[in-house]
Length: 268
Image (cartoon, rainbow, N blue to C red):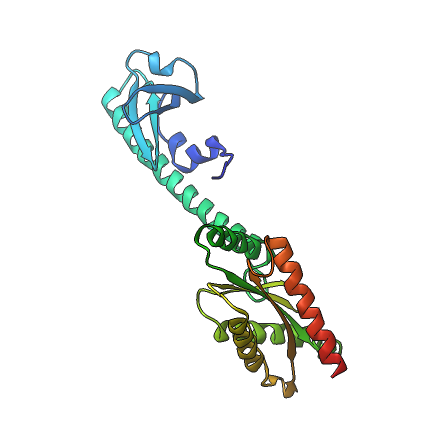
């Protein structure tokens, strides 16, 4: 649900209301049964004035009634003008609504998507993870959460620049998505860290298979302007509810396992 402040004068001007030769104008809500509601714009008392011309405009789930007191001459023509301006107002409101929808979708995408990879960000990841926790609590079906942290990513930025680093992150995102199911979620939570949600994962063997598949996907070098960039990754997976009883603890277990794998790979 959204609340929007509308400059009604600008809307009426865009609808051509002020180009009409009309008298005083007012707008009020009406319900679906036609019962009069509160007037929200215009001079008070217009709807009670003798000879007032009215027209109802339907806009999505709202009904507005326009009322205008025609000038002394041309009452019939004034009635036609009221109908014309009502449809002009409707078109202006539809255009405004479409613009608001586009703005809302752009704002929602910025709030829930990583701007570089277009993957879900941490906010959307947590929302989907909480949904999986609720589903698991109701159905008994578990899920997996896997941390992926790239190895050797910092030297790429240091030696080849941030454009190379961005190209690597985009390729990694593409490979991770290609190695997983459509029902899985791959999120970028910051820097070179990714988090994966794996619905309906029941056991550790299945988790190890997924890790092997992801490692194989990231094994080939990434080509960038004549350079062959080797990027490995450390993984840490945890299963709900086997490894933890809530989401925060589950993420902590996966994060710890990922750092344990990273430390082991440095020693090897």
